[in-house]
Length: 225
Length: 225
Image: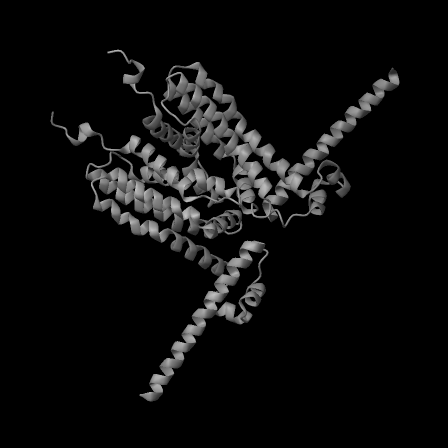
């Protein structure tokens, strides 16, 4: 019993050490990829920067592509989480405009994360060489957002609170109405810096245009004379 | 007189040769950049591929950045020209919806050019290293489109055919309503292939949403009871 307990404590210590090394590798690799690009970065250099041996790197990640994918997806998921958490708020109110405004602001706020913008540029630049990474990035980022919005918009449409026949198209338009003006500027300007007010203004304008096209009209909400 | 004439013929022959070499260098460089990326391509390799000497390359282009910039801007200008040519059509009709539809389809059609998409990915991927190129690309591409649209929308607004207070914002929204759904998919998928119908459908839907937000309403067009 005592030996089992101490084995298990040793295991836990080893797991912690292993997790620490994994984090060190991910951090070192992120810095290296952003400085030198994907092709310019070697697993040797990542090991040196992380202060671990090269076999240790390979214990955690089968190859450079797996390591890069892990960095990219972890960042997308982290940055997107507050937006997904806020999706539920659409349920909580009859004021669709206010609820969409909150949602749009959460969505726009992902552009405040420089690491996301840097990795997005890097993935786009490497798409010809690593098409699978590009597709995975898109599915996990914009794709997931659009799927989520499409479900919500379908529900709001059934409830008579939006008027639309193609929830997926409406979701794509909403997503890019919020993001595309600042995002496309950011893709071409590494020094871009949004203050919160600017992104919020784009979010508000996006909701205004979206509701002009898809808002439920009063006459339909009260069909009886 | 005869000697002047023959000198001038020789000059012309030399200019033609020089122009042919310039084109050969641009074509060779385009292929090399797309295959090996910006950093992976050397002026030596471009000279070899173009079948000219390295000093000849430098006679035409001061350095790799100038050569790359020339390729990118030439492509943007070529691809964008049919759109700019069609801007005038907004004048020729009272049917704003039809005119905006034509304009949106011309704008969407730029995405049918694979070279533009490939260079756009390359520029985005290199923005951290070459911020000036990124800014130039944006100004000459989306920036020029948005400036042009903003002037047109201001004019249409003054004529009472659109209702808007911020022509620049409306221009940005129009541009990205047309382009962003297919363009963002294309950035992450090197094998993307739009058939004409798909881009036209996005263009039509963009105009529908845009006019819901900014179309002149009948009651305002005939204010008297």
